[in-house]
Every structure is written in structure tokens, then in C-alpha cells.
Length: 494
Image (tube, rainbow, N blue to C red; front, side):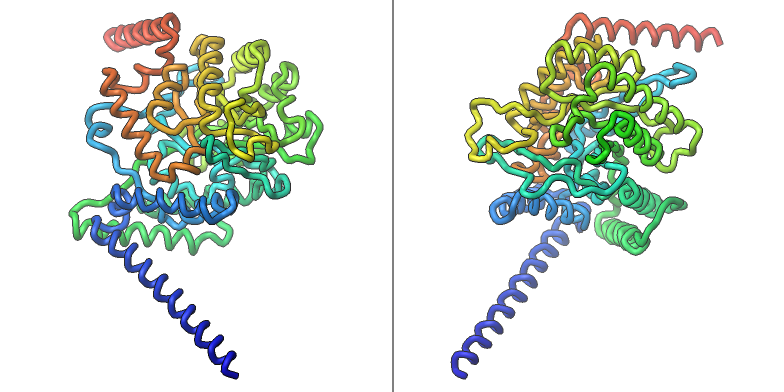
């Protein structure tokens, strides 16, 4: 009986300690929020960024890689991630936005898609579109969700995500784990509904049990901005970032015809919600998928994909910022020169709007130190940086700068972004380095990039893209000037 009493007392003390710790933590968070101009402003403070970056280190120390990834998604979904606040340099001196130009399929007129910042989030982090608003608030100019498969699928068995801490890299073999297109459509529609309610607009769209969360998000935003206005006399409204949708195929759909059908169905189903679309044919974790990068299968796929994309002209754009989203194809970094040249030719023949360069690699540099270096799967992060940049440089040269490139692979600071832009990327994505740097890395990269641009005398991103290719760079500049002069002549004539 004495032992039972001691045991009960010990449990009571543990519960008391847990409650006390939780209460203290909440008070600390509240104090941080309130002493730094309330939540939206508080979450943009340097102190809050450091706290969340330290939190990333803690999660990495105590949780399995996939569990930590899922926790980060939930943290961001709850709107607890740090918020981005532009430096005066980015506000008034340099312009980090970037514009992609592509052709209208019928009129052949130039269409433009402007990204508020050239730095975005790559596919793979928010696979199901659960935390779009929080991710954009962190400072990404665009967020690419997915890869999304038509039907839900679990992907490969766990354990399937590994940190290479010593190498600042990640190996994954997820295998297109996805909640499926229907569920993702609901998530995207709810994001747009929350955005429109916040802006006091009508909110049409799909809803499947999401009204409560949408309403709470909208009311929360209005409440905190109202309180913020009382205290600071200004509201905080983040810029409208863009949404990319990355599409995959179901694993059990193995024939070429089934693969093409999966991608075209994805385009027609989720395309109306997207600012741009990516078809991912380069994941190393889906058997046979990379075979779609060969000439004949690629021609069939891209031709069908472009027809599906063009059919969106006949349907009403549901929420995206453009009526006809550009279509990109994502390629692997493990291609030979001949294979890259074939892809460059097919992409231009099929009038695809752009290329994402590149996906994870199957190769393993000899410099890797981690005990997980021999795990099966795609390698990303710092070990991919140079290979990715070189692939961008080659593809830009092969397409003579005529096809917009989204650069991805190993981005961890402003210099990495700058090098990929010079190599030929119009915009740049990151993902893996957040594993090691935390969510604050986005703000750091934007700050670094703005400083590099000022140091090198660049006023905007257009002055950097393709700078490593002198002949192509100046040819494009001259062509732009000629078009501007022709436009001025037309205006004068009118």
C-alpha cells in the first residue's frame, strides 16, 4: 500500500510538472507574440525566426526524419511558422520578382506569369497542399505542392527518409505517397476560400468538411490584423504568392497509355487551380518512370499533356492567377549529354512552356560521410548543388535560353540562388536545406540574394538570368530591345 501511494504521488507530480511546463511554454510564446507587435509581426521578428530554427534542431534530434517532416507540416498548417518581412534593400533597391514568358497555344501571343519572388518551395515538402498559406507567409514567392497522384497511394514501405547530417543531404524513397487528386483539390480550394474570405470576397469552390477550418483561419486573420492595427496603425497583408501543382502517376499503372492518362487526368482535374503545372517523370522511386524521358515516350506524353493543358482554355479558371497555366516537365540530373539534347529538342517541338532542372540523383559522390549514404533512393541537398547547377547550365545552352527553367537542387543560401540564376534558371526552388537550417532559411536567402544583387549592380532578376552565357544573354537582351522599339512604333503610329 505504501508503494502504491508513492507511485500515485509520483504520477501526480509528473502531471503537475507537465501542466506547468506546457503553461509556461504558452506564456513564453504569448509574450514573444505580444512584445513584437502581435502575431503576424511577431512571427516575422528575428527572435521568432531563431526560435523556430532551434526548434528544427530539436525535432531533428528527437524525431525520425519522416515524423519530423510531418510535424513541420502540422506546425506550418497551424500558422505557427515564422513570417517573412522584406528588408529595406529588397523593398526599395532591388527587385527579386521574376517573370516567365510563354506562348498562347492559339494566338501565339506572349503570356506572362510573374512570380513575386524568384525563390520558391520545391515539390516534396507539402505533398497534399495542407499548409500552402503558412508556407507562402514564410517568404516563398511560390509553393509547388505534390507530387499528386490521381488515386491515393501509400508509397514505399517505411523507413523511407534519411538525413545525411554530416553531408547536409537527404535521401528519400517515398515513392509518390499521396492523398490523391480529390483530397488535394479540396485542400487547394479551401486555401483559396480562406484567402478570398480574408479579402472580403465571394468564396466559391469545393468544400468537404473544411468550412470550419476555413472560417477559423479567416476570423483569426481578421482578428489579429484588427488588433495589430489598433496597436501599430497598420495591418499585415502578405503578398499573393503563386501555386504550382506537381503531378505524378500511380505505381500500379505501369503501361505507357496508363501513365499518359494519369498525367492528363491530373492536368484537367487540378490545372484550373494552378498558377503553373509540373509533370514529374524523373522520380527515381517509381519503377519505370524515368523511362518516360526517352524520345518516343516523351513525345507522346508531352503532346498529350499539352493538349490537356490547352483544353483548360475551354473551362473556367477556378482560382489561379492566369487563365492558362504554363506546363513544365521535371527531369533527372543523371541524364547523358545525348539524352539531355533529345529532351531539349522534344520540349521545343511539343512547345512545352518550361523545364524543372532537376530532381534527386541516384549517384553518390565519393565525399559522402553519413552512415546512410548507401541507402536506396534519391539524393538531394548540398551534395546535389553543383550537379544541379551544371545541368541548368547545359539545358539553358541546349535550348538557347528559349525555354524557361526552374532550378532546383542543393539551394541553401543566396549565393546558391545567384549561381543558378546565372546558369540560366528564371526561378529557383529549395526544400532539403530546410531540414538543417529551419524555416528561417527562406528569409536569410532572400536577404543574401538582395545583398548580392546590390553588390554586383543588378536591379532585377532579368539582369542575372543566363549571365554565364555571354552570347545567348546579349542576344536575348537585343531581341527584347527590338521588340520594345517595335512596340513603341506601333503606339506612335496609333
